[in-house]
Amino acid sequence: MISVSKLLCGLDAESDGLRYDAADDSSREQITEEKQQRPVVVWNLTKQCNLYCSHCYAAADTETAPGELSTEEGKDLLDDLADFGIPVVLFSGGEPMVRDDLEELVAYADDAGIRPVLSTNGTLMTEERAEALRDAGLKYAGVSVDGLPARNDEFRGEEGAFDAAVRGIENSLDAGLKTGLRYTITEANAPDLPDVVDLLHDVGVDRFCFYHLDYGGRGADISNLDLSPADTREAVRTVCEMTREYHERGEEIETLLVGNYADAGFLVEYAEEELGAEQADRIHRYLEANGGDPTGERIADVDYQGNVHLTQFWQGYSLGNVRDRPFSELWSDDNNPLLSGLRERRERLTGKCAGCQYQSICRGGSRLRALSAGGPFDPDPKCYLTDAERNGTPDATGGSGDAHAD
Amino acid sequence: MGAFCGEALPGDMDSQDRTRVQDTPRSATGREWEVFVREDVDGPLKHVGSVTAGDADGAHDRASDLFGWAARDVWLCPADETRRYTAHTLGEAPGGESA
Image 1: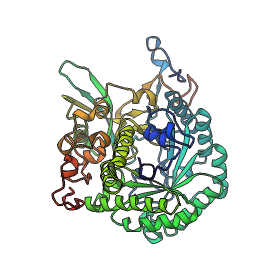
Image 2: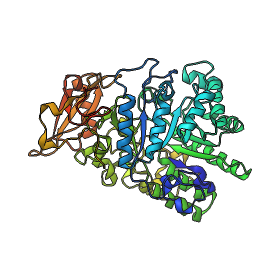
Image 3: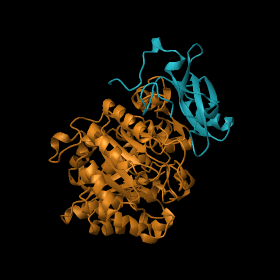
């Protein structure tokens, strides 16, 4: 997760300490004052969802699936996560709000010293539940919207889903919960991005997370709808320009990019071009502290049955199950060669990643997309940097290099 | 890490100290296969997790994608044919029935 607003506009946020080891520099209260040592854990509470989104990584269904962790099992899991030093648990799904023990689990996590945050489609966020979640200690609600109304509703398989999500956002904001947008960028909805930000900013949202499509769950089925490298580059540039325009108007928004660490190299190149070498160096230093793609280190996933995954998108492989072994033991098992290899991937990355000047701030990008193209240490097929950018050589075209993106 | 509920000392365990982990399907999108790999000819066969695949050949392909760079041998067991017993309990007092 890369904070564009932090890097380009110096906008502080509560989670900068997690991402950039920047707590000392921040005027905001920070989640941690030390560089993140343990992963943020996504917990898919349920496979059930009241919507049926075409890009769902969890392949959620409208019916519940057998074997969900019970409330008591969940509390034991949270105890283990707290003892292990997990900083944040992201309650996700399916749609986590279909579980009526969500507030109880949020409160338990908060009491245990883990920051509880929520990923939801927003359609079930009534005034009452928003207030209950606030009272339980929820620190943040990220609401998924993937386009202007017609496009979003088509994506989500339900007419009226956009309006219902906006009502949920308003209820969440009215309850005093920090509330943000989650937006998965595809070829279909990339043109809507600025208008959706403007529309939701008018509603009161000031945090916007933009996800690149990863190839897990139903997301793998629509990989043909992923943006081309040139269009990805353009979408990321749009996020950068939009963030700076808001900043210049004095309307601060927090913008983040998730799921493609080619963005890190692009941001340095963008800063060099737009802000100068000094700012580009500063941004590079922050991104080195961030550490690049977090697979196997700074992100983990526990699914509705307790299977532990390398990321929330990588549901096709599990390290083990928390009913057999505590999460802390599975995550610390040095006998797993894949886990160890991912953590020491610098010498293993192949192809264009091997000699890339941005390897230290990217670390090869999505390992799941790399797997879809070959193996766990192959290049991310969605790297959109040019050869000139990767090699640190002058671009022969003198332009943005889009024509060379591969 | 602090003591986790239900933990027992390995040397003291016999069969009644372990409970069977529930056997509901591990995946709702395909069959789950437990994966074991041996990295060196004289090394141990190690459990390294599970993959989702429709059949054994597919599971071998998935496991090879993940571990081909490290594994000499790969063994695959259908998760629904694997009985798992553990002294670790989650969500229950020690001695309680398996979930």
